[in-house]
Amino acid sequence: MGQVIIETKSLSKHYGRIKAVDGLNLKVCRGEVHGILGPNGSGKTTTLGIVLGVIRPLSGTYKWFGNEPSATDRRRIGSTLENPLFYPYLNASDNLKIIADIRDCPHDGIDDVLQTVGLSERKKSRFSTFSMGMKQRLAIAAAMLGDPEVLIFDEPTNGLDPQGIAEIRNLVRHIAANGKTILMASHLLDEVQKLCTHVTVLQHGRCLYSGSVGQFGHSEDVVEVSTDDNTGLKAILESWKGCYSAEEVQGRLHVKLNSGFSASSLNEYAFSNGHVLGHISLISKTLEQNFLDLLKNNL
Amino acid sequence: MRILFRIEARKLFRSPAFWLILALYTVSIIVILSGAEAFMNKVVGDARKNSPIPIPEFSLYAFPYIWHNLTYIAGLFKFLLAFTIILFICNEFSYRTIRQHIITGMSRESFFLAKLLSTVALSFYAASIVFGASLVLGFIHSGESETINFSAKLFFVAVYFLEVFAYLSFAGMIAFLAKKTGVAVIIFVIYAFIAEPTLGFRLPEEVSWYLPLKTFGRMIDVPNTSLMKLFGVNFSETVKWIDVVMTLIYTSATNLIIMLKLKFSDY
Image (tube, rainbow over all chains, first blue to last red; front, top):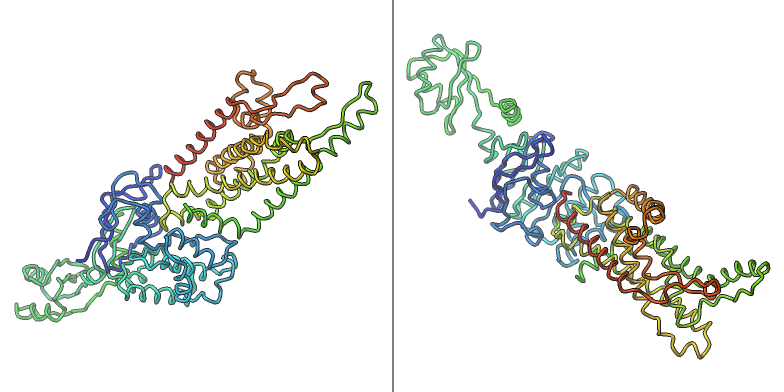
């Protein structure tokens, strides 16, 4: 595990009776592409707002790079928060000059970042003339200005057409490939699955899962089996080291496997213990199914 | 500090709305100041025809009284600048660029400082216009004997600067509290043109004396004209320290409120 980039300790923010963020612990290490996944209203943007200094938490603390929060440390982080926010009457280049001045970095990088997001041609156009996709790309350009170590993207593909979504995702991959740490909020599972190495699942401002995307997807592989004597098979499987859990569902057994074990090793084990399986099939739960289950179980 | 100034300048100087209001203000101030004497003599001239006693001609542009006369007249039009300040502060909320500033790495204190700088700069501009106009008009209209002590009442320009700065800080406070341009403008107009003048009449003198905008305006009081002397009315020919001190207290308070509001809000 690399250096800790951001760590929050029991962060809370309430709006009246609504607990937008409720005792959240979050930890992101260097080099991760960390997704914050959750349905609308689960506290993603509030969490990012708090760690970016625009929302004051009710309680709890957070540290960037191990330091107490400060404006100077925020300059090491490039971020987009909800919608792209710029002066509509200024052109792309002038808007980025303001960002560069705030971050105290030279203006030379502006052409480069505009190039990266494909807005070079429109750098002299007013922000108000931009399409949603172009606004979103300008926000990403602004985040990348000054080559910050950490990037935060809040719903980066919101409101974009399929081509725009693909472009933004490629951009995020490109940035991640350069070794940057990325924190990305999304309500799209597919997006997190495609882009992230780690994921924190939020609901009602609480963390339901935090860890690698791989584990989140795989631990839930279920093998469905049946035999003449399901009860006996269940007893035998439960003492097997490859079995995480086994339960009977509509006359069949649903067996969750520990990592490193497969349907065929289960078959082999059952056979060597005197059970011939009449039925065996793999119900690979998608991340989506997993996610929905996780939310359902925590309602 | 220099960078904050550069950031604010970029926002303002590239804005068509800013140039429009500034041009409107500058042109009207120059027209009003240079036409004031002729206008008043025309009004008084009409009255003179029916007057049993001789009414003297107005001479607004004689040094050193011109500094008092013109800063007083210019003070009546500072509300145009207040609209500029309200517009540009509320823009930061309606475009939500204040949020972008903070997440990009500007501290709330720096944001406050940037707005303070804009207010100071605008007040300085207003004072420069009056200074320039008075200087030119004064030299055109003054004889040699008057020109000799042209700088005697120059301090009125400095006080005018403070008056505008205090007034704009007050407008800025309303903008920071209201956040929405329309709401802020309405509150400001109602307060400055209806509520405070009404209170000024209704409240007992010893209370209404403390009203903030009244205090700012009282620093440069109505100039004594020959007409007033004729009627035996005598206004202050100088600036009272107590008014300056009161204005400074109010201005510190408004800016403190802005600072605290900024520090303890979510964006």
